[in-house]
Length: 365
Image 1: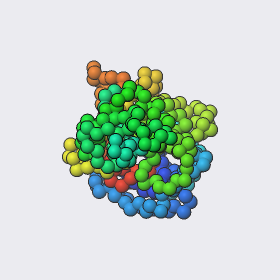
Image 2 (image 1 turned 90 degrees about the vertical axis):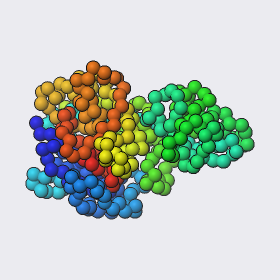
Image 3 (image 1 turned 60 degrees about the vertical axis):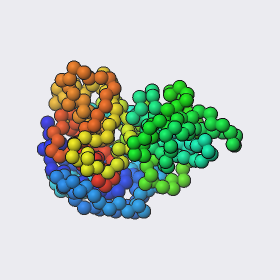
Image 4 (image 1 turned 180 degrees about the horizontal axis):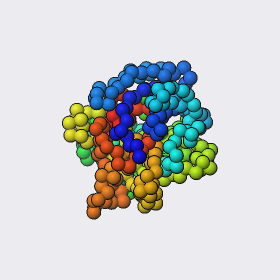
């Protein structure tokens, strides 16, 4: 069976949104979130080169997703014949290897951005990093301005101004611009509060969508999203529709689901420290027994495992590295940094999206 390391990689940035599949020696890029004016262009970035940079013109970033989702365009590069052609993401089935197992991330994005109020009446925006939180103890949050240790931040009662803070947080620690907030209410209530008062944390580089919060919660979410904990979407999943999933079922393509809670590290440039120590930001993942069983069976039979998104790659390869550990847990953390030279043990093919310049995901693909 052919694995990732047996191929020479080049990346063809086509600005937003892309999808690539390494199956059948083809690179596939869906560009559904970019309007038709988007050029297919860029410069080659050799994998041994750590300057993973290209120019991303902001005017080429679409403000709204394509509809329907699976109408995203695909840019296909066949390295065997050195040919380029286009298709639609709804036709992804014909580019998958024969008899594959598709593994998807069923994490769900939480409306984790919220406007809080200081005791003085000042406003402060918080992004609750729920992907790093285990639903107990202080909550890590990214704040848009300084907050003193010991200060209280909270939600004011809707329609009452001024009024005492109801549910609030005490600032008990800080590391850079990440603050530790201790709630004065049962921690698990935070999800209910954010559902009522929170804002969907779409990436900051997507501006002026014109979409209402209700629409954002629908659009920035996979149709199979299930487990709430992410502050960013596993965006490769966003192209799938119920119609496309049903078509893949009719094609006899099996699916399995894992969960990896996605954080801000997915957008962050790689730091010098991460390059030096070979470890990335921490993310938590879980592989259910049913998925583990299906993946193991496909590996034994020599059948291809296709990861939908880099989050799935990171979870499966982290799991493979712990295969002989006696301390494997149901929910685990990983700081795995996938970059050349990396020998993949589980994943044979990848469907992935656009990646920002100088990010760890550029190195992975």
